[in-house]
Length: 502
Image 1 (cartoon, one colour):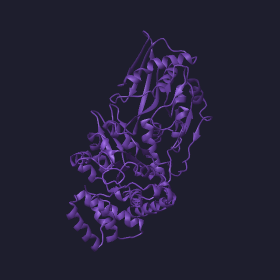
Image 2 (tube, helix red, strand yellow):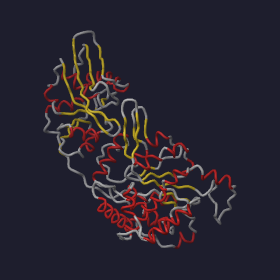
Image 3 (cartoon, rainbow, N blue to C red):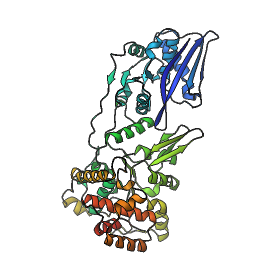
Image 4 (cartoon, rainbow, N blue to C red):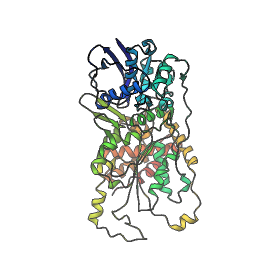
């Protein structure tokens, strides 16, 4: 007897349908799996056998063959346990095959028949709706995530026995989803905590308004990390589409908290400087998203940037330009989105005290040049704002009034982003930093005086064509914050001061 079930798998951040066929025939007892299963999928034979027996059902002492179609795509993960077990029960007459129609089944089985959470449920739920499936059976830990997708009935089961009950009575556990409300960005601190540092605070606001990359250079204790960690507090809340993108990436990576639904705050990722290039950009035999994709629509903070391996830093060059990571394998290619605001911090020299009065710097010019050379010129050229963060005197910290609150700055950032959205339309770039090609000249062209200033500065500073374009885009953001329709000379002048050249 043969039974068929629907399931799905994830490659990259996209899901594809997998049809599971289970056949039980007379012969020597065996359990064969075909359809390019990897080690994890092949190990499900023992989990399925013991889960069925420990749940009080009969496991057939016959020849069992399981086919995972399409057969030319390698299958990985433990999410096929539950559909294989249900297929065995349906084939042996312990479950009516009719109840499996129009249902997509996912779940990892424990030996006692319990059903554990899996990865990548949101992309699978989106694919299920696209394929016309109306019902999804999965673990309860993933129910909130799947319920984000509209017009999809979500059935949950904590054990194999509950899964059979849910299939036999589909009306009871089913719930229809509704879009959740977006909440404000979560952050540990407020920008009001920062005393002094007017220029870095201004650079932070510009970076948030236009999506520009930012490098903070200063001695230890100057407030670089403090500033960077407060950038999320001035970012606007995620839109629903952005939240879907972020949740899908974190679901595939397995970093989505158990039981949570849609992510409603912008990601903030701060990897350690010992990270590998695969962990940063993603990869592996079965491609998984890296830190730059986990920071999509949020912030990637690289503290002590020169301490990162140079090869790790260089792999970010293409994602910083294109906003995505393409990982090619022999049979398929995975594309991970990677639109983030890069915030990096570094010292002015190896000891960190060059130009400081509180402590003398004893670094030689050769050591300083070698230290700064750890961040290559092409990578620096992709950073829009380079700002010096000097040490703040203790008297200023003790006596100065609190700075402007994050809520006030966020209001200006939200207004500037609305201006950009209205300018570029729903199908255009989301922010000024995403402008490419002729769109830069069309939307960021300064007035006559501003153009003359920029051309003079480009000659004196030796700007590249990329650096020239990035100054134009920063100028456009400064003009948006000032509610100016045209980029003027004063906007270009402010943008130029953030283009520090060693």
